[in-house]
Image (tube, rainbow, N blue to C red; front, side, top):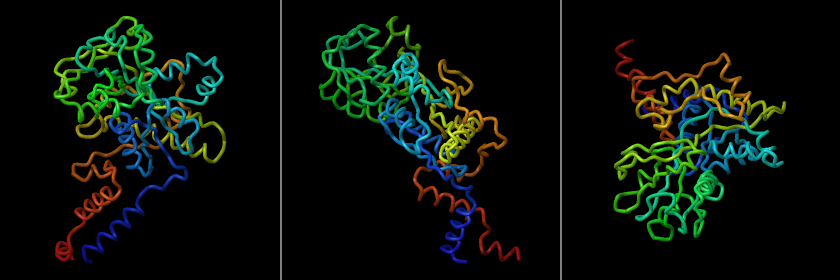
Length: 357
């Protein structure tokens, strides 16, 4: 058999050997391409793919869009949402629309802390210095928008101008002097600040230590060196990222399939948390995840609970070969090529086969 035929045969065998596909499409809503949500979503999708479930990690504006998508968008079972957004929904559930939202959402797992980043030009060293300034407060459907508004209200800050920009747009606006600062809620290290900010930009992170804000938000620290241009530890506040889903309780075909998918993904995450924490695998924020922690006002999805208690386990076996990372490759062609190469390496060559006969 020539190499081309061997590769084609291997591809067919790999395809036939994959676990059965799900009838329902599955999607997890994440965030901006330069943020942490999307990388966490890609980590989860990589594990799901390993067990035959194609879970799309969809980019979004953030928490507000993710809640709406989980409730209203077809084939969207998961969304990563900030805890303060969830607290806001629960606190104001006297509002009919927010009450309906709260009734439809369920928690899968609390995840990790997301630090509030306030990046500013020179001359701004505290929240008080934002008084009368032009500040980007987040994209229209982002969790950052809600967080920044609540923090500014807690601190009693009146801005000259509130600009609704996502971080990718806010950074060049800050460089060009169009704004004086911008908020970004993201788990450190956020890719945008690692890749696109340098010391030459002459910008810095502003500490958030006001007692009025700390009465609402949890104290946190962005450690020294989290970003190449950040030399010292920075006190700030944080929210928690939470993996949410829909209350799939109706006995329809779609809801049964979606509920099963939620349960399996929950089990996959729980079974592979240690794997995700391994070097070179998941985002560093997996080190902070405590799947057993609880969230006031939010009950865990019955679908997730069923998956966690089910008999089937989903645990990635760590392989000593370089090919073990094939399933984490996001590009389908490169992923299959990696698998094919690994399969070929494991098969005896024609010359070796001849010696064995």
